[in-house]
Amino acid sequence: MLQQPMLFCDIFDVWGINFMGSSPISHNNSYILLAVDYDSRWVKAKATKANDAKTIVEFVKFGVPKALISD
Image (cartoon, rainbow, N blue to C red; front, side):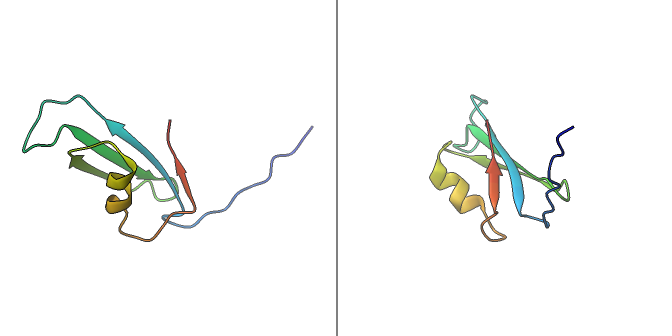
């Protein structure tokens, strides 16, 4: 049987991110950026005007994570 390596990460090292879109426009925002920290399960959501990389960069407040996971 092959063994998989165990990966250890700290808080804010690995984030899952996704945009929820095509929402009704409110205050000029039509998307929701959702981020979940894989270690602590901390969740942050923010209404945004665009669903692009610039929006994600502006969203990061705790330094650059080691990995971003998105579909």
